[in-house]
Length: 88
Image 1 (tube, rainbow, N blue to C red):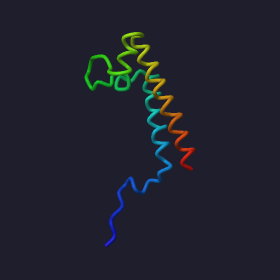
Image 2 (image 1 turned 60 degrees about the horizontal axis):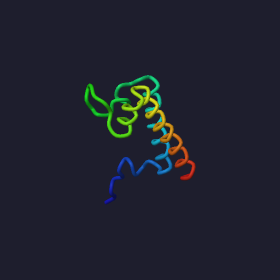
Image 3 (image 1 turned 30 degrees about the vertical axis):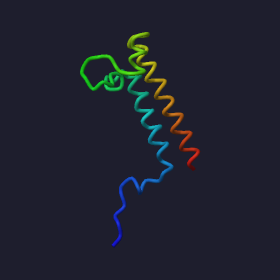
Image 4 (image 1 turned 180 degrees about the horizontal axis):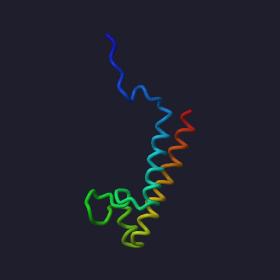
């Protein structure tokens, strides 16, 4: 009897980089359009973000958080595309 393949086993490994790049694009659009769920990553309705984004918020305010998310998203996009190219 053959074992049924898992959904992720059927997806080629080369597409992992594209998934990471797509996440980066989603974050980039969210930061540009000021989507709350991209800027407030605490999971609460109000409150400051955590980690790197808290540091950016303390030093630069909401604009700093947006810049931080934009920087992170660009790193995701570039890293995902580099990973995709290297896996081909």
